[in-house]
Image 1 (tube, rainbow, N blue to C red):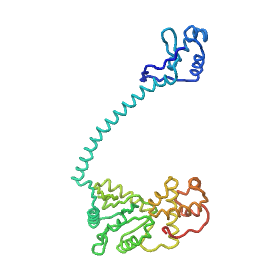
Image 2: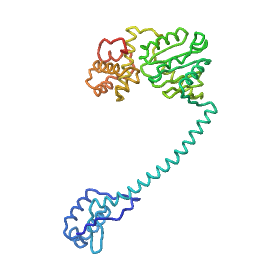
Image 3: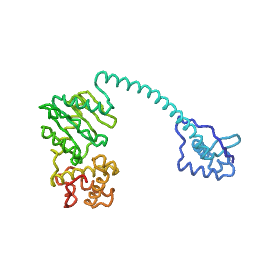
Image 4: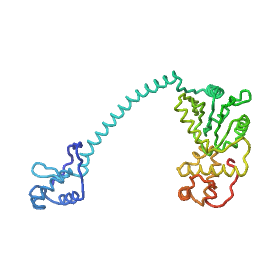
Length: 356
């Protein structure tokens, strides 16, 4: 019995060879034969069945006619004959993908530079990376607001002075009659600078509220311009549609936030704030976030965050985060409830501070 070591590559544009249980059975029987030719197959299987066996094994690339008889192929040789042209096709496709990607990357660079230049010329988009210049720009626009100023202070540690963007010209943060709303995270209530600024805004007729979690720093003025802050500076977007959308987002969060006028919280209010923060932690635990990421998102130190997590797991009676996730789903702890998380797990006292 001859067993070729090579086989011409297969045209893989059509159906690929299939190997089923019958193919395996027939292949084993053929391999066990001492002599492999048409006559031997007919003696083994019968004349009609022998033709079907040859056709089936040939379709699977496991049998090949050769001069003077038939040859059984090694499975790895047959597989190589199928895989090689596929690999060649894949390499060619990858080369073409890289070529197309490179070509359109160059086109995208032209698009971005042109659109950015056009937006800047039309005053729709501007990026300011110099910190002093960006603060001056925002303060000037806030001071000139005609109807409202909405400021959301997120969690970026690079922006600890972001609340100072609101000027205090003539003893007032904005013009008379301008609605001023400032959002912080709950944890910011324990920062002296935020307390002082919140008290100043409240005395001047503005409003400050806090909520358990915020993501970005934004400022929306008169539903006309949006300032987006990050560690590299500020991006101003002068587009009414974008400004209206950001205003709607702000108002939705504002309705869920708790008032803050700069003073220390009472014990009862501290319990409510703690419940809000715990609900946020439960949410982030269910999302699988690490302690560092959770702490950054709720605006507290990692140490404080871990203390909250430990207290929360103890209240839930959970021995692990996995078990806490199960109890979260079972008890519906991510749903808003006036009773709070602790009461929904069991009756227990709660400390009145968020940040320690």
